[in-house]
Length: 250
Image (tube, rainbow, N blue to C red; front, side, top):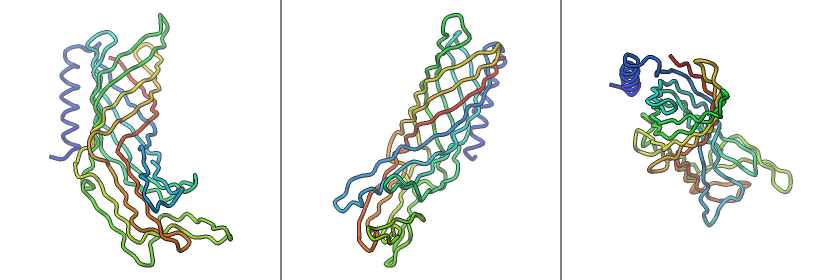
């Protein structure tokens, strides 16, 4: 049974178990926006200064069901997709985006709604677990070995004489963590506006990855303008996101 079917079954069980017991406590919704992976450039002795790792903006969307077990406390289960793209940066110019497509994800959280007095406005605080399915890319290792060099992105960089060149990879290794599920501890804060049975919200999310780094890029030998360098880039799998949401309460 594949990952998508498992999530569908779990979501259906969650939805049915609460819908039949308490219609007024049940809600469904959608939440989505843009997320970016956290990045780290690890210092090495022959570092190419200005060549850094950087996350790339990606879609982060899910649909969810919610059960209010107290008036302003709820449990939420969601399924959706999340992108895990990366890029490089040289002297503040972003290039070489590696698009890894979108991955299935699921969310389990406990949420607290905090009304602002008697108004329809309020705040939201949430803590949950987020899981992203890496699938066949888990444990993937890609290598570039070339004496002539393979271009790392298409970014053209001028030297002091005005001659342009690109960062060339001669000995490069890309590693993806070997576990199929990337787990995040996921705090979320936001604001919302209630319209009778409907809620619109804006949330800020941080996903703290648990375990080994998601990606490790070892640039063992790269060159720029015929000079050799090296660099190490790492992406833990942690992310930040800004999302908008809509919810309908039964």
